[in-house]
Image (cartoon, rainbow, N blue to C red; front, side, top):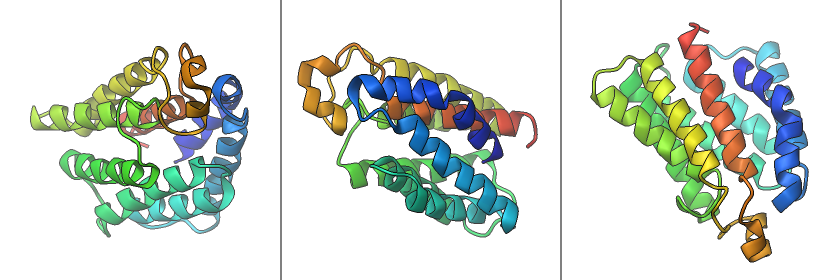
Length: 201
């Protein structure tokens, strides 16, 4: 979560620029506010397990992030945290399954599917890539590296899509030609997770 907070802080302006084209021009600002709260909350009362870290982070995002992003990201993290349970260590298979649970919870909450030009266009490919890599015997770092690549590709693949869900859907064809900010921030978070695991953080 520290890596995620650093990434959001670094890319906040870029996320807001993306959102200014097809949204409310506040995605980066909102995400930065939420992950600043996460960083502070985890420092004040550090949870003892990965699941507990995600549960607390999800609650903080819901309370601090405006718009749809707070409930969506908060729900995802809380569902992943709940799926991980109280285990002190999590292997790649368990993490991939928990991430799938979280992404599907986002889909149900927002009523969106892959191809609707939302965060799911980064998240679903990422989870699928991780599951495939784990099934092929890759370690968690390698599996998450595959997820990072897939998330980035999925986010960029939203550029030619017309939005069917979310604020951007109101623009109709004018949403075509812009990368979805939610997909971009999702790819950013997947990359942060991959970097943290690769570095042993």
